[in-house]
Length: 108
Image (cartoon, rainbow, N blue to C red; front, side):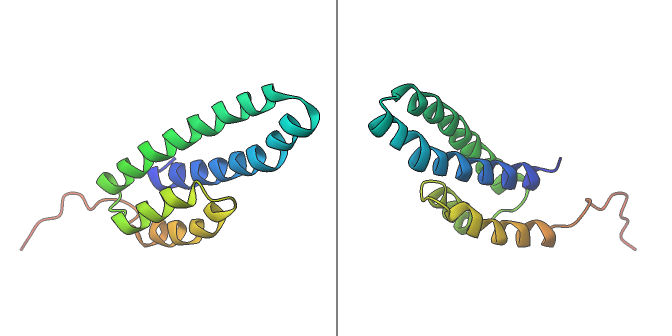
């Protein structure tokens, strides 16, 4: 899977994990006396967030992801539902990338 695809999938997964953490795990902790749900959801979200940060850096270096879009994606990762809106910009960037590097190109 291409780097930008991994980035987009990880961003969406991080967004889902954040929604789960805020709207399912936290109420279960405080209303249902189930703090272990927040522990597990927090670990999963933390792993996905760190993976997203690593992929953002890799995409800036290898896929010409502009710093502004990388920063926006990183900020969106901590705002519930925001990654779903930023994904459109990531998809546009992915679609504008060349499909394969030009090889054996000779200058006349």
